[in-house]
Image (tube, rainbow, N blue to C red; front, side, top):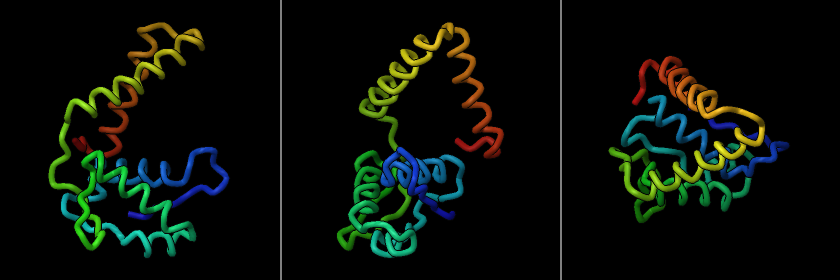
Length: 130
């Protein structure tokens, strides 16, 4: 899987990395147990600061997407837990998205349909990845 960063994006680089790795895991482009490049190598390959990659890896590790060992090597987790903290964070993200939709005049039905369509499109693009 090729990771890319957009240097002119408003989104912080570490968030871009986090999102791309999560998409890679969900779409099965990254397999459980698959090693990720070291933070030093990835930072050199992308031309970004080592600490930026390390911050992304630490966040992914904290959330259970990757596992890191004492040598600071990273690999995709074998099983990503659906714990209470994930559900709470997802609920908060959805609440904000619902508030934004409401501000833009969307109905609950339109919002719900949009979310369902996004989920289905992801599944279709990725062969039913779970």
